[in-house]
Length: 575
Ligand SMILES: *[C@@H]1O[C@H](CO)[C@@H](O)[C@H](O)[C@H]1NC(C)=O
Ligand SMILES: *[C@@H]1O[C@H](CO)[C@@H](O)[C@H](O)[C@H]1NC(C)=O
Ligand SMILES: *[C@@H]1O[C@H](CO)[C@@H](O)[C@H](O)[C@H]1NC(C)=O
Ligand SMILES: *[C@@H]1O[C@H](CO)[C@@H](O)[C@H](O)[C@H]1NC(C)=O
Ligand SMILES: *[C@@H]1O[C@H](CO)[C@@H](O)[C@H](O)[C@H]1NC(C)=O
Ligand SMILES: *[C@@H]1O[C@H](CO)[C@@H](O)[C@H](O)[C@H]1NC(C)=O
Ligand SMILES: *[C@@H]1O[C@H](CO)[C@@H](O)[C@H](O)[C@H]1NC(C)=O
Ligand SMILES: *[C@@H]1O[C@H](CO)[C@@H](O)[C@H](O)[C@H]1NC(C)=O
Ligand SMILES: *[C@@H]1O[C@H](CO)[C@@H](O)[C@H](O)[C@H]1NC(C)=O
Ligand SMILES: *[C@@H]1O[C@H](CO)[C@@H](O)[C@H](O)[C@H]1NC(C)=O
Ligand SMILES: *[C@@H]1O[C@H](CO)[C@@H](O)[C@H](O)[C@H]1NC(C)=O
Image 1 (tube, rainbow, N blue to C red):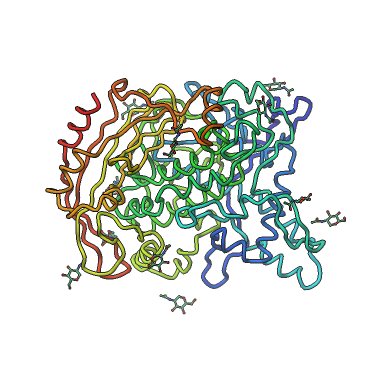
Image 2 (cartoon, protein in one colour):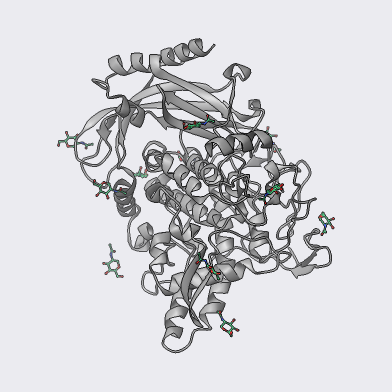
């Protein structure tokens, strides 16, 4: 049983303290369809922006949310800080013995990466919705009803980076023009950045000599230019477009059949966490990093929740397709723990997702309690009508959408579009890295075929330990090579000759990065000699794939054949 408690706001503002109770994550209750009983969907940002009232309310609500005093647990600042710094209690959830001292509550490289971030976005959505309702109530005349209804059905939007392949204008423009209760007004864009109310930040909680000195910025920044300390939004955007994320998410939908592997880099194969890492690094950049690239600070960039709603949607759609595996039921041991979880804790689907309470009595959410998004007051457009369908009907509906949106990439000369009856071979690289062996994180492992980057594996600085996995498709690289055939007799000798990999560390001395940045406007990282680390383990494999005959089925993969000769030759060459 928890009673409201007094939180000394841990020095955020020495003289200000605030009485807070638990803020349970119950989800929004408004806007439920009276016939289908479904809650409203979280919309694609591009659709929300064209929705009129809901867009006007979202922008004003976010601006209002960002004005809540930073010592208040209901502020944008405190919610952003749950993810990393400041390392202070939220909801009164204190550290436990054995918990790491240098980490926030966020969970990465563990199965509950997917489920921990779910109530996190809901908490943000819930608090932002209060601002939206307050503003909606200020409209008068015929607008009053319209804006109240829009507030009721508003949910946190998502940014589909796999399709957009760039930062949307509404996230990068300085100002936005919207219809307010006082008429049309142009306001500073709250999606562009968060401006810290108390600046400089408290140096004890946000030390300048850690985290690449990121605490020096008065606002959240993306790809900061070290000469001006300003964001370079175009550079961030170009990095988002540089990787075929649609093909990557499609591979998770089609090749990953267990919740564990889908959710996290801690298990074999590709995962949504992998694409999640790509976006963090693309938006923050590495020379030196902006907020998104540093998980200790990423919660302060307003784009964070747009990104995590996108990840959450992929998880929800994957769950609908793989409805028999929609929750994990294994136990694993957390390598590093988190702010209020000791290293070595055994985690199951009933373990607490701290600091998120499911009710005011102090019951924590668990992976099991957040399994179904409808229980948290929202859904996604592709899941509308779910209450009225069998699981199999829903599965086919969602597969159709996934095929339509994400299957466009060609891999190994086989179009994974549903054109019927075609089959072929695809080639992949399986990668396993022990992060503990990589001294300076973050780092990036590049797979190259000839001079072409076939794919890369981002290794964020958090957590600093643990084995991580991914799988990279060689489809684009082989397509570009224009080989006479894609059978193994042609491809394997080619890869033995042309494939290589490199590990680049991106923790770079500030002076070096500045010089390099000025000359080239980009920093490519420092090569780590691969001989210095026993891992990575890298394997090339091929698989036969049969494409479906209908749009509501997925490709079917045959047994994998591994080609150790490629790895041996590459290693012999680089020794
Ligand atoms: C900074 O944070 C520390 C640790 O919480 C606290 O002791 C100190 O009073 C804070 N400083 C200011 C100026 O608020
Ligand atoms: C943005 O709006 C501010 C006033 O809120 C104005 O001073 C500034 O010129 C505007 N900038 C642009 C690029 O429109
Ligand atoms: C509308 O204008 C009034 C009077 O200037 C002001 O008090 C109020 O905050 C404004 N409302 C909004 C939503 O901007
Ligand atoms: C950028 O930040 C650095 C480190 O705090 C500072 O020395 C420099 O003056 C800043 N540059 C500008 C243009 O504000
Ligand atoms: C889920 O399990 C049921 C019962 O075993 C089975 O009939 C159904 O085909 C399975 N669905 C999928 C998509 O595997
Ligand atoms: C765990 O899930 C797997 C498939 O996801 C299933 O085969 C197995 O029976 C489940 N075990 C328990 C104990 O529920
Ligand atoms: C975690 O589980 C393992 C294997 O079941 C067990 O040996 C160990 O004691 C457990 N650790 C804790 C902290 O409960
Ligand atoms: C879904 O519900 C509607 C009424 O809301 C009904 O007309 C329709 O037949 C239902 N469809 C299915 C597949 O049950
Ligand atoms: C995928 O390709 C089809 C056919 O070329 C096209 O109509 C569709 O717009 C493409 N989808 C995306 C998301 O690019
Ligand atoms: C970084 O990589 C880009 C693209 O490959 C290249 O054009 C640039 O010259 C490289 N910069 C350095 C400093 O190596
Ligand atoms: C597609 O249809 C062809 C011809 O009917 C059939 O041979 C093939 O097995 C079907 N493919 C799948 C994946 O069902």
